[in-house]
Amino acid sequence: MIRFGTGGWRAEIGTDFTKENVCKVGQGVCEYMKKKGKDEKPVIIGYDRRFLSKEAGMWLSEVLAGNGIEVTFLHRSAPTPLVMHTVKKQELHIGLEVTASHNPPIYNGIKVIVDEGRDADLDTTDELEAIIEGVTEINSIPFSTGIEKGIIKYWENPFNDFLDDIINVLDMKAIRDHGLRVLFDPMHGSAAYPLMTIFYTARCTIDTIHGDRDAYFGGMMPAPTKKTLGELANCVVDGGYDLGIGVDGDGDRLGIIDSNGAYIGANQILVLLYYYLHEYKGWKGPGVRNLATTHMLDVIAEDLGEKCYEVPVGFKYVSSKIDEVDAILGGESSGGLTVRGHIHGKDSIYAASLFAEMICKTGKSPSELYAELEDKYGKFEMCEFNLAFAREAKDGIMKTVMEDRKLPDFGKNITSVSYDDGCKVYFEDNSFVICRFSGTEPLLRIFAEGASAAQAEGYIKAWKDMLNV
Image (cartoon, rainbow, N blue to C red):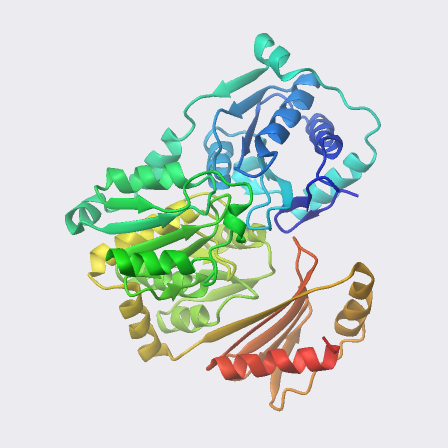
């Protein structure tokens, strides 16, 4: 069964991510496009640096070409934001990126990007799943034949428009004048070239670690967390760099290391950029976050005379709400954000560039800027617990949480409970706890935020005790 979660279809290589299933996805995309009358434009196909990513991109191309649909095939690995930008810029109907994003190296997958460069919505993926399940015959031609016939075309340098659109909105002079020293960790992924090009153009000193292709990601998860960026933090301090930047395998999630080695996580990045764009660059408008992301954004927005909107997990909900309310930016605690006027998906390359601009324009380090926000708005500490579960255990937990709607005894007043996406419990002091299943991995996730880590951990412990996990 091929199922699309919050970030596309992902599966274990060799078990479910096989040539047969990749081709079934390709055939399903073809039949979906013909059904919707959207087969008159080419499909752009990109891929990250994972094991079999380029090959899977070629398999998809062979199926699309076999169904008479033109393919623009990237001649080098590329981050997901580039494919989204291209679909938007060239007014295409479909783009495909072969990636499992931040998942462990045994996974690969396919992200489907639709009109305006958006993540495919639930209606689209539901319909696509049904079509794929009914596929009985796959039409395909060899990749070389598609090239000879001109139905598959290589795109030698796809980065120009993407890079120019980012560079044109940055204060490049401020970055040049500052002389920023940056250490970049692409985590063996596909975002190295575009981000380094931007920083070289801004005349920064930029060095890299983990810039080579490694299908095992150096034995680490290709996600820019405090743990996985530990080596980057040490190297930033030892090398005297102003900034460390880490991005995930397909370039849509971001983590920052300050000059003192402090990890600046997704929640901090989100509120820092919102405050910077609103107060320093003069952008006005609300913010958007998913329900597992810091409530500090709400408090800041309210103080600035704005509003913060909450949406379910899945960046398609964030980008949709940004358009609806003309928000300055939107993001999520897992490390992704986008900014008004850019693509409708997560982009660590643009976000990292804005972060560098913020440091240069303010003359302050991220830690200094965040300390100022904490002095003004208070502390917000988030903790997380992830539990891998056997498939048969999911139903029991789901029944307890979502059907029986049992809640732990948190020892304090609850202001409201939401079941829109898992179970989220809100408290009167702006703290919260959410219990939900991951949409991309077999994990139960419990997120909690409080005025201290101890408070947040207490909320998580209450859930763990009740669920006996």
